[in-house]
Amino acid sequence: MQKMLTFVFVALLAAAAAGAALLFLSDGQPPALTLTPASGPVGKATEFTLEAADPSGVRAVIVSLRTASGSTVLASQDFDKLPSASLTFTLGETKAPEGPIEIVASAVDGSIRNLGKGNAGETVFSMTMDTRAPHVSVLSGQHNLTRGGVGCISYTLNEDVRRSGVRVGPHFFPGYRLPGGNYACLFAFPYNMTPAEFSPRLEAEDLAGNRREQTFPFHVNDRTFRADVLEIPDSFLDAKMPQYEADYPEASTPLEIYLKVNTEMRARDDAAILELGQTSVSEPLWRGEFLRLPNSAPRAGFADARTYRYKGETVDNQTHLGVDLASLQAAPVPAANAGVVVRTGFHGIYGENIMIDHGLGLMTIYSHLSQIDVEPGATVARGQIIGRTGATGLAGGDHLHYGVYVSGVAVNPIEWWDPSWIKNNVADRVGHTE
Ligand SMILES: [Zn+2]
Image 1 (tube, rainbow, N blue to C red):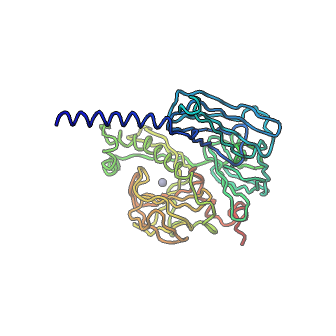
Image 2: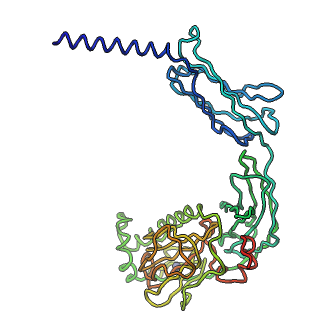
Image 3: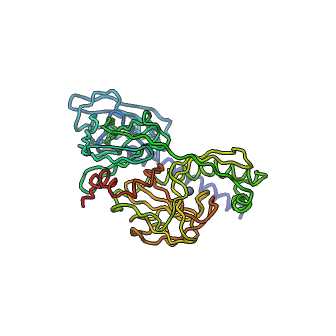
């Protein structure tokens, strides 16, 4: 029995060795070649990756540019018969003409075929060389912005682009292609930027990576925001901090928890909104002015500079990025305009909240709610009741914290309550002609 098992084992080994030898002899195919990108418009900055794979291993890879005037080697590398190899390259300063070009990729495998030289093969990839930056034509005339507010620019492009939009300091506001073919871009004059610092630039990058950047006429109005002092009583800390204890186990007093929540958690919450604001529906779902919580009194304004005091001492400073509106307890909250719900649930300082995407990067938030009546993904109509006011999260009493964002940057909600502001600055630029 023992001998029999040994025999079987040896026979299996022999079969495996023969199989390996057979693979070397039977592999009559050159390496499989995959190029990314493999077609379409490309430019001098386009980064190509060539992948070669072969069961006998890859021995060498060469990439050339072939045009009517000849062939130029772009990159080449020898490999130690790796099962797969990759090579990255660009067209760089090679003199590729505008228009059709061919990239020829060749590779040799590690088999012993062809007197030991291996199988060689080549693949030709046809693409279009494009070194010209897209041409941008601005259609909208006046771009009047007030600090903390919004502008809308409308433009056309002479070719398809990877992205276009307006850059303002650290922020990029993407433009969206409307059904008619024009582009519209909502961009902010951030509340924390001075008129001297505000210099928006219109950018476009085509599919080949060519970039255009240009200025456009605009006019800005400065404005000041209110300053507010908030006393933090122990009763508030005792009532509100237990919900955040688990987030900051190292904090030893309710005030320490509060300061963590008001700084770290606030920054994290606003970063999450900025992230959420990067993806939006590419058409304006809203129509007309935005609704305000009915029968409500303003309790705090947009960009109020808040000084927080505890037992007479200043302990923190923050900016209030929405408006606080107080009505009856658990008042029904209407969606300010039509859109798609993109977020619901408890999020840090905002407590139970809803975010609605109105398209083109424009979003609204409804926070400190006591009840949420919608789910993410739901389409809501202007005025549809989506929840009820409350005091969840970092709120002292029942109210609605309402905020408006453009590509995740907080802007003054007041403009969107004003039908004539919308008519003069936005409506026709997004295709809303009444
Ligand atoms: Zn608020």
